[in-house]
Amino acid sequence: MANLVLRKGTHSQFQKSLQNNVIEWGTGLTIDQYFDRESTLRGTPYSQKAHFFYVLVPEDDIETTELLAHCEVYEHPALFVSTSGVAQEIKCMAIGSVFCPVEHRGKGYAKIMMNMLYKQLEQDPQVRASTLYSDIGPVFYDRIGWKTMPSKEVVIAVQPTWQVPALCQSITNKAEVDRLVTQDNIMIREEMNKVAQPAFAVLPAPEKIHWIQQRSQFYCEKLGHGDIEVFGAHIPGTDNYVTFFHNFGEKAIYFLRMRSDSDQNTKAFIALAQREALRYDFEKIILWDIPAIDGVGDKQTVIQQREESISALTIFNDTSNVTWLLNEKFAWV
Ligand SMILES: CC(C)(COP(=O)(O)OP(=O)(O)OC[C@H]1O[C@@H](n2cnc3c(N)ncnc32)[C@H](O)[C@@H]1OP(=O)(O)O)[C@@H](O)C(=O)NCCC(=O)NCCS
Image (cartoon, rainbow, N blue to C red):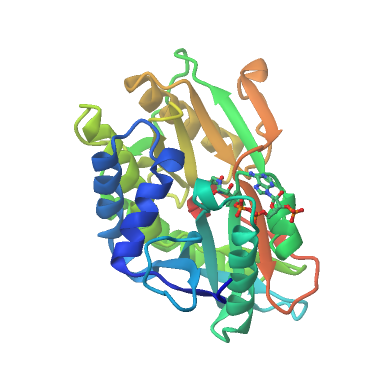
């Protein structure tokens, strides 16, 4: 067998990768709609700047579209507090869409690709950390080096009776999302400097929030609902806010990123999310990595470890016991 290499894929290889993985990640879409979705997302400022595509191919046929395995990599700004206690801005690479075509499965190609990718990232002086979200359990990635992290999920069944308090308002334009998220980033930087243990956090860049919300918009339009009108909620006059991800496949609103100083504000955000969920006949509100909230619907609320999208993290060349802070949905790819 020829030597295998990991390299950035060509345009044709990327197109082929979409044909390969539509079956996995194009649920509910035709192949044309899937291509359309990916092309829309790749056109966003976030993707233009941060998206990379890798293939595992034979060294003697590097431009082949007969891909042995492929994956996508997204660059994120992140903060890392080492034992020295000062938050450093670092580059974190998030891995997604790890795929081996059906006919090549079971021959170790995904493992070879991920081992090569791990080494490549580890040797890159610009890169300090890498994250991913496993849909195939914790073992595969953990053995390579991406360590399984707590992956909490709070699922709240939508209840039509909740009232939205007057102090809480919808975010209805992208400029407001930018303003609140930018302010949040400034505060996260300050807060991370006060963290007393080794810690890591992806920063919620405004363009990343827009990228995920663009995905919602794509489905909203295709399903004939027009434009998404509510991008989140906030408490005017404060820095408390939440951004939403409308997941039409799961019939759920995810909280992408929330800053809330009180249970009262959190409940107000949930109430507004419920109102928004009812507009599309959604069934649940899902929050990742948010502390348990007293009295939020009792039996209607389930707190569980996720079985899909299991978080995994590596900080290269660091053996300290790092806590992943703000491990909310916005960091997902
Ligand atoms: C998951 C996937 C990438 C594995 O590709 P592959 O090339 O067949 O995997 P490998 O042959 O390299 O397997 C390496 C190891 O992972 C294990 N493994 C493979 N697929 C697995 C799965 N779905 N769940 C758990 N473990 C798996 C293998 O048993 C093997 O273990 P071993 O080293 O102890 O023998 C491939 O099945 C795929 O593309 N699936 C659909 C997309 C998907 O789910 N991607 C993962 C998203 S997080």
